[in-house]
Image (tube, rainbow, N blue to C red):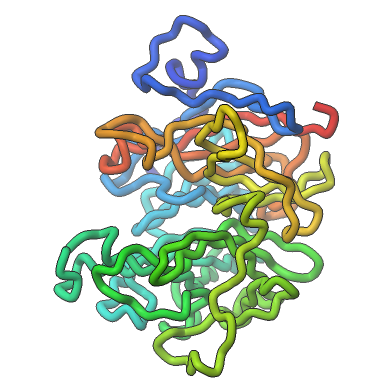
Length: 397
C-alpha cells in the first residue's frame, strides 16, 4: 500500500477561496457554486481526495472516469479510480482511505476491434459479497495501428461496454465470459478508421431498483456523430448478453454485435435517447434520494435555455428514471472543450453519500459529496487530482 494521507486535505486555493476570501488561486477560473434555487446546494469547501503529485503509484494513475465506491464483505470502503490500469483506495471510511498500488485490471490490448478488449477502464461496480461485478469502458484506440492513417487518437476511437468480474472482493478482475462474448453494449456499426469518435461509452454506476439493475450510458452515433444518453437494465448482472435498453416503450432493445449479428434482421439496435431536452448528455452518476423521494442524476452539461448559461456539473430529478425534470446547474467549472492551452479543467462528477446503507452507495440522503477530477494543466497533462465537495439536499431548500 502507498501511504496517501491519514486525513483529507482542504484546498487552500480554488473552492476554499469561496469560504475564505482573499486566498490566491492558481486556477484563474475556479469552480463556483451555482445557486439555482433548487434542492441541491454546495455546502462547503472542496477537499483533495487523491493528489497526483504525492499519491500516484505510476504516472498514469488517476481517476479518468467518475469514481465508484463499494463496501466489501470485510466492511472496508473501496473507491475505484478507473483508468487503463485501474487501482483503488481502501479504508474503514471515506476520511481515512489509503492508496493501493495493486492493479485491479490491466488492459488486454487485443489487436482486433471485433474482440472488444483493447484499452479498458473499470467504469462501474456492484458488490455482492466477495463477488464484484464490473462494467468496463473499452476504447479501441485505433491510432495505435496502421489502419488509422491519421494516427490521431480522436479520429480512430471506437468504444464499447463490456463485462468483467472479481471473485476476491475486488482485488483482481477478469473475464468470466471470454471476449467477445463479454460484450454488453455497442452501436450496430463496426470500427471505421479515421471516421471520428463513435460507440457506447462510460456507463454510470449500477443502481438496483424494482428487481432490476440499471445503468446509464452515452451513445455517439455513426456516421453523424450525434450524442445522447441511454438507459439499460438487466435482472442478471453475471450475464453480459442480458442487458436491454429503453426503446421508448419498454426495455425491449437488444444491443447488437456489429461483427456477428445479422443487423438486417434487427430493428432499432441503437438505443433510444432518454429525456434529451431535459438531461442532454448527462450520464455520470445516479442515486435514489431518500429526502426528495426521487432519483438524482449527476452529469456534465450546459443549458442554452438559461441566461446566464453556466457550463459545469448539473443535476436532474426523476420519479422513474425515464422522465426527468429539466437539469439544474450545481457547480460551474471550466470544461475541457471550453479551455485553451494548459488551463485547469474539470470532469467526471458523481454523487456519493458516505452514510448510505448497503454495499453499493446507490442512495443519497440529506448530505452527500460531489466527487470529480481536476485536470490541473489541461486535458493533455497527467497531473490530475480527485476532489470532493459537500452537497446539502432537501425538499425545503
